[in-house]
Image (tube, rainbow, N blue to C red):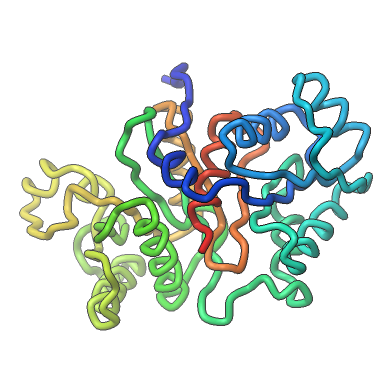
Length: 304
């Protein structure tokens, strides 16, 4: 059942990222093969100018093994893994880098530093959230899943921040009026299913706040993405069966959907934290280089 399909970075994401060339990027704990390979690809695509943070000898050896000439790029030696996140956050706070890229480091360690008030990396008007830009091949139309990595059990207020962040990103990749399915286990509003109640409220708030998107819920997954399923169930809404965005009720739901698409379908998952002063590329340490490249492209696209 597991897919053996090659994971490929989508052209549409690269095309939009190419409009913002040579973005400075902090590569956090960079001295491992997969992070280094994806950075090499991103440099080859002229997406980023990396600043490597980590053990200098490991970084140089890793680059040398890949025949990647990094002599013109800055290396900040920091042998202690946890401290590499502090260095990256400080560089971002000083406007010396425009994006932060997770290398071989635990996500919680990196995000703990990014969230510290002393670095002033958080927006005063929006909350951080994570998006997954999902595609199956180079020319595939994306579906975006949020939030499957950062906000664990968001309430309606937080979900509205998540919604606004993902709509803003969608506009940046050419989706002028995205269709957003607010996911639940059912398309019925049930007192016993909190996510359905939240979805109904979010749908109403999106209209009230005049968000530039078509937002509708609750929708179950099948009638979010299948016109046939939506028609059989008699759901008449522009979002039903053709969602560009799936706004999930919890991190487990989003994470499960994304991992299913990766491992069963061979999807490319471009993951990035948005809503702050710098996008943060958050990938699994087991992600392939093509998915890491796509994530860096998504971070570049997310920049103002």
